[in-house]
Image 1: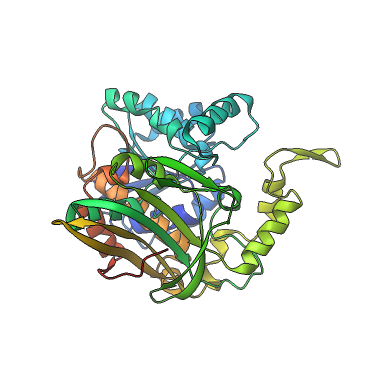
Image 2: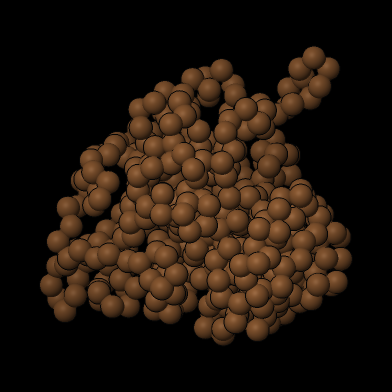
Length: 419
């Protein structure tokens, strides 16, 4: 029996909330909080007769620590699930610390305003010292470690699929399959088709920033940065087929490099179709991916926010999307003194996801791990005080929960390796 506050009511939160309501014996009460209360009310009304979980709704500005604290003090949750925007991670963490409640999210912090001078100063220093220039990194949230430890609170970072399940796969491989891991390749394939000329499968601001940034990977103890989309590979994905994939910077590389220090190389690849890349490059070339405000007919607008308003809402893609996703990790290393390869992955069907929770698979593969991570925290399996990423905890109960609640793992002991 627990009381959980969910911040956010977008596509991923929609999945996580629906899955929580399927376990009322653990998630006995939920409060859904968003800037747009009408979204929360509509979801609560839909779920009212489908669950015994008690659902309440409230309006909150997650950019305001004061508002968040007032809500947390009034509701008294056992856990805050932050499934809003990554821009709001720090304010929600501040509120959780102030109110003495455990915290989790699905993506690490990045700033909304990348021109902010104070943030830019820290960012420029990090780029120089660390060697990668993506706007998102764990340093801002890792800075909370000591405060969460002293408060006896747990903060779980990035408990979606990638990051999240991808790190649990690494912890599982380390625990069960290898004595020493040499290389990790994380492969994210979306073989779905929504029928639009151009759309993003999750928040356009976050997605387009991530994809248009320089790529980077970890090799021999340091970062190697490359121009965006400059390393391309092809891979034949189980149940999806042959796809083009491109090397991107991704946050779990940063934590895995720290927590599995013997790894010589970690890379992250994501599939993209040519149409998507052509649209994205055109939009970038004309300035539509910029986060710098401009004046248009007497109004200040941020180009990428305006673009977001024009693009299809990712939450609306569910009934249109067909096909499957395939996300997993390929490892090389040693076991009992012998070389070994291993591939652990999940295949998820867009149409089946929509039938179950009215969502496409990209939101499903993030929302289900969020629920399972909350389940680990609420049942006492993942409770170490401090700020932690998924691979720091025992992967076994988490992967067992994923198997049970919609994202079963598949394994191969003779995978094709990525050159």
